[in-house]
Image 1 (tube, rainbow, N blue to C red):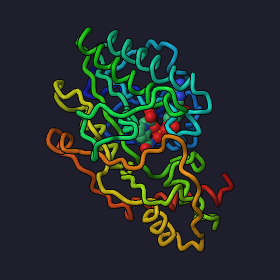
Image 2 (tube, rainbow, N blue to C red; image 1 turned 90 degrees about the vertical axis):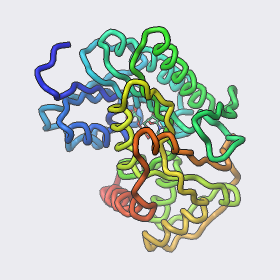
Image 3 (cartoon, helix red, strand yellow; image 1 turned 120 degrees about the horizontal axis):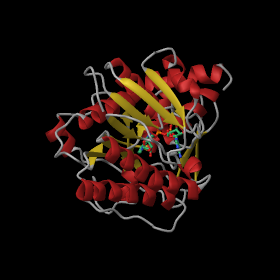
Image 4 (tube, rainbow, N blue to C red; image 1 turned 60 degrees about the vertical axis):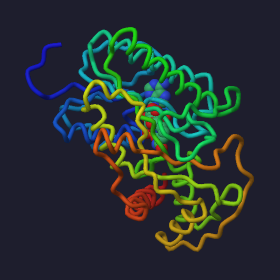
Length: 320
Ligand SMILES: NC(=O)c1ccc[n+]([C@@H]2O[C@H](COP(=O)([O-])OP(=O)(O)OC[C@H]3O[C@@H](n4cnc5c(N)ncnc54)[C@H](O)[C@@H]3O)[C@@H](O)[C@H]2O)c1
């Protein structure tokens, strides 16, 4: 491809989703041309409405499980429903999105010589037998359960990325993303941060699964987008997988209490049984990202919860 400037043409699949919309914004601010590809299954135009007037921004309604022919310098492959109710809605299509989506984006990277980034997930570790999880851990995943369409789809996508690298010398970047939160998360996708905030703002009971002592680590979206860009810009030998997330651990009870405190809600906690295959603990070991990318999350839970709560508050007030 012939280029007149340092401005890159960057394709973001899943660009109208939670993470994708923040990434579109960041790369436009960095002075690039951004193509946002989305089938709008879980993403919405509202997430990118503020970008539509930008002449360097383009939106493409397309399903990543279908091939795409276009000229690009970099591809961020984020397209995939990410929360259990969404990815279990049509599990066969979830696997197609991950596997055929990866094949199509890798094919595009091969044709154009583009660098290609894969949004993988901590779910590749399954219910981990070691804690925290380094990238060298192979995981403990159920191949036939209701979460498998997502977990195994993402694992197969990683396999494809590394085979395209070995077989076709592609420049690949694989990030294993741990729980991330922030404005533009879905209000009702069953993820714990959005669940707790929406329940607290509505004054509904806050649902804690099990005894609430299971832990999660939460990364604020701005920290995550920073490491995406650093990984994409890193030397070609750094392929990943690289864990990206915040190692700070909180129990579900601690999170619920923090949300109640920051929203000033009068909601009470109610306990429900743990869902199938729900991991008890998940925490990233981010040594590799620290050492190779000089990155670590900077935004504390309380600091990130404030804008997230403000976002949901506005969303609920607007009746959505
Ligand atoms: N948010 C997190 O905590 C987290 C954690 C681990 C991994 N990830 C990964 O990051 C990526 C983005 O997640 P998110 O949280 O922004 O979720 P999201 O649901 O908000 O975004 C996914 C986007 O992909 C689009 N999409 C889904 N299937 C598609 C298809 N077949 N073709 C084209 N577009 C399609 C959706 O419409 C949506 O806009 C996903 O690949 C997810 O697996 C996210």
